[in-house]
Amino acid sequence: MIRTFILGLLVFPFVLNAQEKSSVRQTIETLFTGMHTLDTALVRSVFAQEVLLQTIAEDKPTGAEIETDGLEQFISGLSKIPPGLKIEERLWNWNIHVDGHLATVWTEYTFFVNDAVSHCGANAFQLFKEPSGWKITKIIDTRSRLNCRTEAEDDQTLITNLLDNWHQAAAVSDAVVFFGSMAQDAIYIGTDKTERWLRDEMKEWAAEYFQRESAWDFKPFDRNIYVSEDGELAWWEEKLDTWMGVCMGSGVLAKTGEGWKIKHYHLSVTIDNDKLQDFLKLVEGK
Image (cartoon, rainbow, N blue to C red; front, side):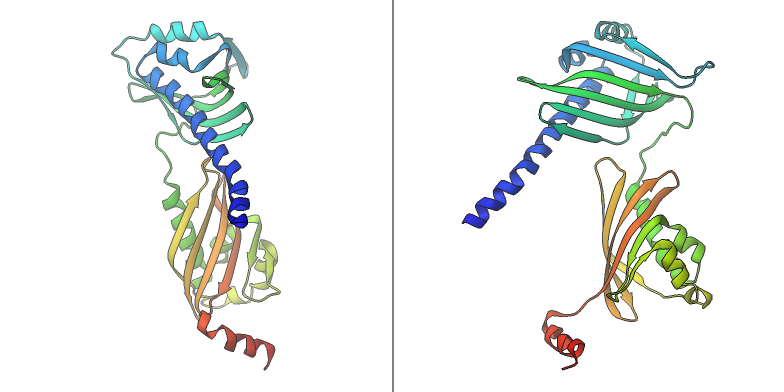
């Protein structure tokens, strides 16, 4: 009873934070619903009484410039858009932080006009929690016409391909692909209690294995992949068919300018519970 109560106290703040993040996101989604439908009343409903709207134009010949507008200018501009003109701002990810009555949100976006790319960049929102709910107090965004994304990335597929290719690289002794799939500061935890390798340490240790036709051949199955809300981190667990029997692996990936990279991997040998006592006797030499 006491244990359950204490556990509830520990979990409750995380539940509240998740609920607040959901409410913050709903406020911003309401803003874009109003924009896309040209509903100025709906747009106005999500803003606080005092609002600052700013844009950083990245493509100016003289360099980046910051432009400032008020809410009424924004509403007026929206009201002048012809009904036949379709506008859509697609948000590619969400990074939400909440502390008390303050929330900040970062989203990458691409803006479309009649389904054609207009510009892209990032939005940074600040919100204040009023008695009636979360209200936007400030938006600052960047705008560029260069390298605009047009479709959401399928992170699950990208990560699956990376991990499959990583394991296959070891099977065919392709050190370039194997170690290139890992971040420079990646850590690899092996099955031996002494095996904690930084990437380049492991590369040096494994050099002789990668001189063979196959360094090692682990075939993954039963993999589960999870991606963070902001799309910057991912983690996974998997089973592996190996010469040691079925092993288990788990790891963490980070999105970089070069795509997803492995930051941490932990390989472990599995032992059936009913054989654990025999295993301990073997390890202890009894």
